[in-house]
Amino acid sequence: MMQLHSTAIWGFAVIQILGWVGGLLVRCHARGKCGRRRQSACHAFFMLALLAVGIATSITLFVGANWWLLSAATMAGMILLAICDFDRSSRPAMT
Image (cartoon, rainbow, N blue to C red; front, side, top):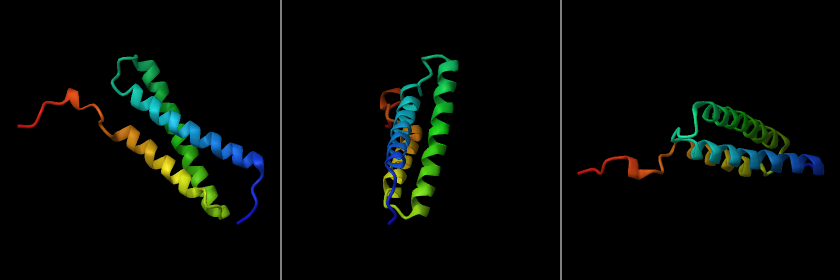
């Protein structure tokens, strides 16, 4: 494995944090109570963060660092935060 520069390490960490923040923002604004403009901005931020995490995953896989696992886990967490329905109170109970 190649030795990575400390700037690359910090950049990788920032991308991972932005990914989780993007996923949480989409989850917090999923109900649409915050207004269309803010919700659209959160979705745009999420998509850019998802793209950045995907690129980081590809780069770390290509470089040979084992960090691609962390990046792939971040991407999976972002996708689950975006698509899973955690609010069961808004759905009617099954009979």
